[in-house]
Length: 84
Image (cartoon, rainbow, N blue to C red; front, top):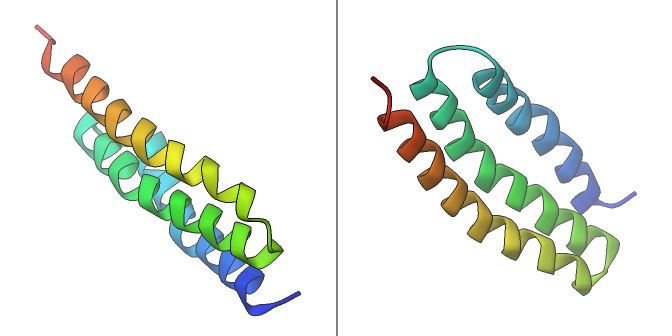
């Protein structure tokens, strides 16, 4: 176990935990905030995991997640704004 994997564990518990709590509870605006904060944290966790394991091919997934996270947030806010 190296320092990169320790950083992945700490960031997973300390960073993704509050984001998941925001996404699962609260108003729709707080849920969007949880998604917006959670996406970069998840990308950072995946990048650190790829570096920690020494697999450069694992860096493709965070790159796709960045693009999907931006598009997902735009779709969610569009659906949020089309209410009655």
